[in-house]
Image 1: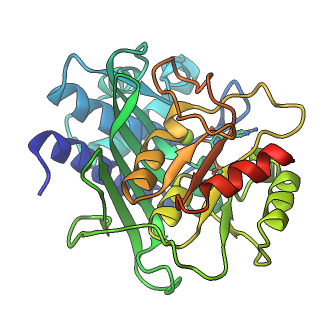
Image 2: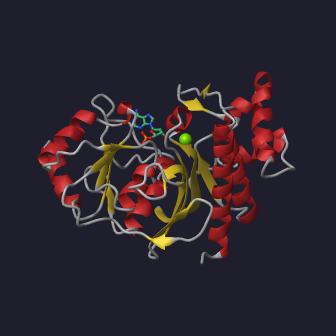
Length: 322
Ligand code: AMP
Ligand code: MG
């Protein structure tokens, strides 16, 4: 169904998801603090090591821009952390050593290139630690445009209206070829599309209130005549929810005082193509396409709107009037 190159990337993401779930089930995931005060776990590092290794093997000249780096693991006083990551990676690649793991992780520190991969090894680390939603998000970008998006959501219910049913969903979108959804470890997959026909509109937002302006979101919902409270999910699982018609839109509005903050490419690339190939629309708050050609941040874009497409212009108009 997928070409061999896509299959390599999909298999790596599935293996990384397996590691993340194993670490979470073993309850062996203390959170360490990064220099920006955000959390990182053994699973973030392990997931990045596995995916970067697979991509480097198959596409040795491709650039990879991933969220994590191995600086923390290189410090002698953190050798126990490097060992803990290595033990997890060895479940997938038995030949892994602390040094190879560190090298694989640092394959994700490339500069921008005409063709590159971007990876969030655990998107929504706060949700992962809390026991909620998270995603492994990998995308291939060519000439500033996302061409392939793979989004693994290990804790997402396979059927939206059965929240206690089977969990683990994989979204795969290829430019011009639609978006498919399957259980996390493979088949069967089916094509998904956004929902244009919902009578009562429904939005979805981050669990973390510091990641988007809730007050502005409420005002937007009121302008659109929405009475339902928004759904809440951590990570790019929100894009998956819009793509499969569970929600009609997801907006990310910088909080007052952080209007200069720009989004990370790995927090949006895979999710954006998933929504677009499901028939939806993704722009920034000014209606501009997301520009992945500049660097690790979306410096040319202000906030995010991902919608079912049908409602997109109404959202843009309402935001412009706020
Ligand atoms: P979500 O689960 O959608 O809230 O998104 C998680 C992502 O939010 C993380 O990967 C971070 O990169 C990003 N993030 C962290 N702090 C902020 C912030 N102040 N505003 C917007 N996004 C943030
Ligand atoms: Mg992350």
